[in-house]
Amino acid sequence: EKAEGYGGAAGGLAGALAGGAAGAAIGSIVPVIGTAIG
Image (cartoon, rainbow, N blue to C red; front, side, top):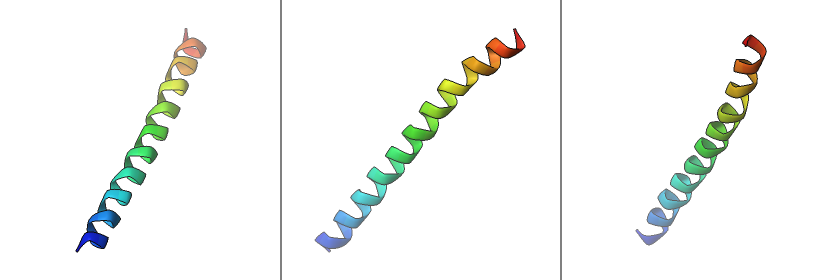
């Protein structure tokens, strides 16, 4: 049961890191698009 808990925690951490990376990419791209349009 503990092993499953660790697996879930690792999956959640990986998901959070992936989401954070995606958010950072979007956050860096949006201003560039805005500058190009402006």
